[in-house]
Length: 277
Image 1 (spheres, rainbow, N blue to C red):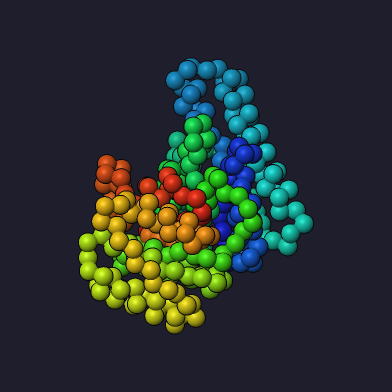
Image 2 (cartoon, helix red, strand yellow):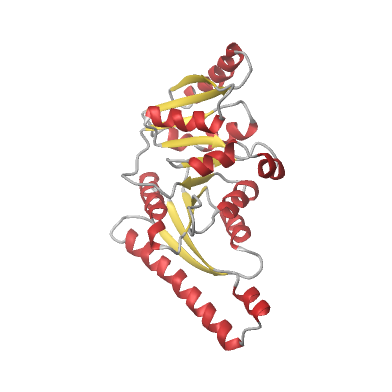
């Protein structure tokens, strides 16, 4: 069951759609929601490098705190009138960094909600997403910065490759899968035989069936096509509402140097993605 969630509150009002999605999800699950607003941790570093006076440093910190408080006020206003259990925290950062602090806090919640990194001047959340995936021991729900429309869990696509991370993600998502009308187990075949892929799909489908979840297996070939492109194409064809997948099946370094399905999906996602590691 998902009984509590933690949300990284965005400073920019244009990125509040992740907040709205988290509120809707918490309401659907009757889950407690904690909104966390971070004060930018660069103030002390800037003051050291630029040799700012104590007054100038204090002014910078005050301005940053005001921006963070505004995000909390918007959060409380968005929840106003709903029967929803919430809390909020204003976290002033030091050199530890928001990603480390958030991932540590996330260990005490069932699910983290973080917005996808945006384009151009939007805040970069990749470090928070990666740190929370690797270090929290909890699943992470990444909401696309283009998220629009009503919250839905009608059609969910589960990416299955038989890996530990994929198994963890699907089991973490069971509370969501039980609320879905259509659950598809998507297997992207990249060279193995179809029979082997089908066998693995049947096994995990049977597991979900014992949880009362009916899942259909879909096998798609991708010898000469990027796996992330295949996933996103299938999501579009099915008009899916969410992707469930294992995150960072390889090491951080290999994903950084060579790319990977996780990084590609995080860069091209059009629907929320629940990831586990």
